[in-house]
Length: 397
Image 1 (spheres, rainbow, N blue to C red):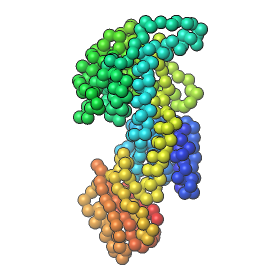
Image 2: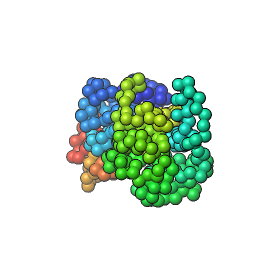
Image 3: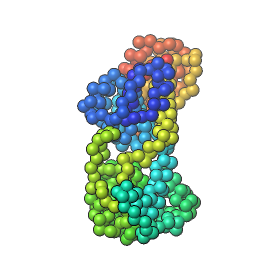
Image 4: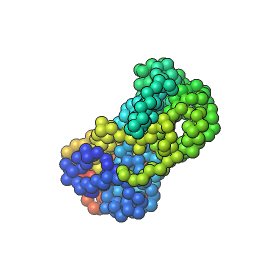
């Protein structure tokens, strides 16, 4: 089996595949669609991060592809319905780098309040501008967290630990951490000394924060975005920074980001005072990348070897413990009545006993794992592949 890992995924991701004798290639950056189409023709396992786009056109060229691993939180760069239609499972890791992002956000809040970045630039330029003017402790100030999910809620705890007041808003009902208080979006903007975005990358969040939202913010407040670049209107942000409505900003994600390390970067926020720009490194700590590599790679490997779909983002969650005396089959199909009956009929007519099985559905996709008491042959494979509404059939061992 062949695996391809892109975008500097931690080397630990390849370990279970190389140990099992599979062929693994790693590349340091993302690839444009045309180049990637040439690379994936013989690939069964694809590992990416946030910059690689998995499109229908790419999937049409990847006829052998079984599984995609997103070694990051989001999966909006992957066409999930197209993957499901082709029987390709997708896994990600929504947890491992959340602490890293939350810590960076808190650090940037403190640096903005103390004008640390601006002072550092002045010193690098040979200017000694020691002053307390415009510098503040964060204790007692209010941080407004937009999006109280895995990252936002961790930031809430960290901010309270240094004495900040926390208010938040979220589109769903979530449990407040500590003394945090849920408020409306408008109230959050009006009362917060720091507004920090931690929303997801779904299409409805595109252009979410612009001129009107900046207008509602408190005079002399600060703005942070460590979520998605397309969420914020950078022209409106730059205008509010130049005009003095905002005292500073910290931005880790951008509407247009370079493809890889060393590429040229350009943005409207460059060269503005008290603005911290970082190259999408919120989750880029060695600890986070190692944890992500282990977790996502383990999920990919269990899917390839045993058909385990637990924690897949697009497939039903099914698992059967592996036993040495059985032979395993996986059947992926449209969610139609009678599919399990049809599968078992094909197997039973050949005098084969199903020792164990599990089936579940998710949306339009049905997924079945079956352990049988005889070794499968080409006739059985062809018969199971020929069942109407079959998407994909995999004999595993």
